[in-house]
Image (cartoon, rainbow, N blue to C red; front, side):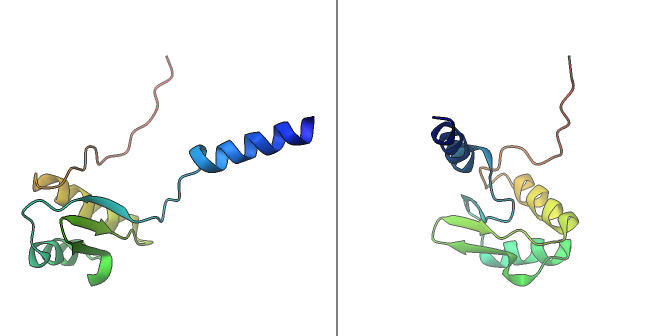
Length: 95
């Protein structure tokens, strides 16, 4: 019985508890153009292929440079065109 229980827990964690931090971030592109997105990525020091508009969707591929990632996400959120809700570090405060 224990191996089945352990397998069930591992399966649930793999589905819900472990998000891939390097997975692409998909958001609404709004009225942004690829030129505007490229300018934001360039200003933040990211590689040109970091953010691409595909139809109505903006796909952001995080890089190893967390400063560039944060800069791009904050700048895109500031445009008001994407549906990125929160772009900042959050530290849990214990009650």
